[in-house]
Each structure stands twice: as C-alpha cells, then as structure tokens.
Image (cartoon, rainbow, N blue to C red):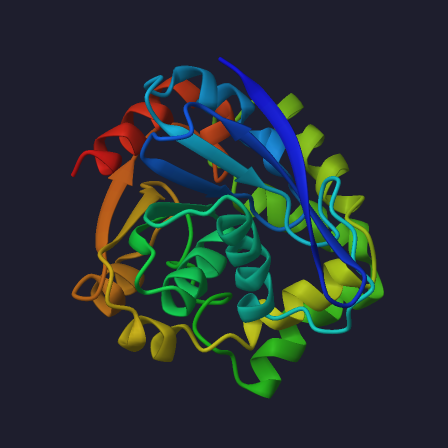
Length: 261
C-alpha cells in the first residue's frame, strides 16, 4: 500500500508530521497515538486494514517526528494538531481513533469538529479513573509527584501497571525505554494536561458515538458503572495496554468494523 510522509505547520513553532495511506477518495480514519508514543505504533495495523480506506496517522506535537516550541499542552491543543492535519488533507468526514492519551485527543477533536468527525474510537482509553476524569489538586499532585522526582522510575511503574500477567517482558521493557525518552518539558506537561482535562464535560458536549475497547484485565467495574451509559465499552483480551501493537491484525478488524458501522 502506498504510504507518504507529510507535514503541516501550525503556530508557535509547531510542525506536525503524519503519514497518509490509501486512496484519496476513500473513507478517512485518523489514528492518534498515546502519550510518549508515535504514529509508527500503527504501521502494522495499517497493513491489515481494508485497502479502500484512507488512513492518516498523526504524530502529536513533540512526539515522534513532530516538533513544537509552544507552551500549551492541553488535550484541546493536541486536538488542534489533529484538526490541522484533517484540514490540510481537505477531510470532510472521518472517524478518529486514539490510544490512551490519544483517546482524550480524539474526543476533543470530535468536540472541535462536530461536522467532520462522525465517530470516536478509544483504544484502552477514557476508563482510567486516576487519569481521565479531572483530578482535584491533591490527587493530581499525588499522581504527578513521582514523575517530577524520578521520571524514568515512574514511567516504569505506569507501563507495568498497564501490563497484565503474561505480557511479554521484552515488550514491557521496550515501552518503558520508548516512553521514558519522551521529550521534555512537553512530556510532563502533557501528563499535567491530561489529569486536568475535564472528561465529564467533554463527554456531555460530544455528540458523536464513542466506543472504548478496554483491556478486560485492566478495566474496573467502577469505570464501567460511571461511563457505561455515555460510551459503548467493549472489553477485549488482545494483550496489554498497548494491545494494538501486540495484536495488530485483530485490532485492525475491530477498527474496520467501526468504519462500516
């Protein structure tokens, strides 16, 4: 399948890099990676998707190849990164799919572009109650303090918490290494932006259907009870928090089904 690397320039010294795959007139799927990750996480998935789809895989600011000197690291500003790509590609209709932090960005993209985004798909996102609903100052400080004191150590704890028993240790180590290398200050600032994001308000104002594919061994009943009436939650057993990397063919099948829903 043809793949092109492109870029779009935004304000505040921001250049967003993205990959385009598939025919120009195909239904559009926009893929948004998680915190500390990049668009290459979706390379294998793209190879298993139906050939008629047009796939845009985006590197958010200061992730992957994208660069920025901006001071604002909110979910709303990341959504503007995605919106800039959609505008550059003259997209009139699309499904936005986001992993982890990218799920929050997908919701904000839908809120920003209600006439363009038709559906939102979250890959093991939106259900972590210590990350996604806006945290009060005390809870936010408790979560962020370890990252401010020992970033690599806290990063290891985060990745391990998202790795159920049986997860390949080599994959865990690879993600610890990759995510620990996220560029600063954007990395920590993006986490701060996530824990202060008001997901409840965002969900109230989002009109598009939202589906969450959640790892069964990780999601809690409390999260299902809290959000099950606002989003469609599908529990899966395809691997760890990074299941889209571990099980690209099965993940592609889930996404293809959502594109035809």
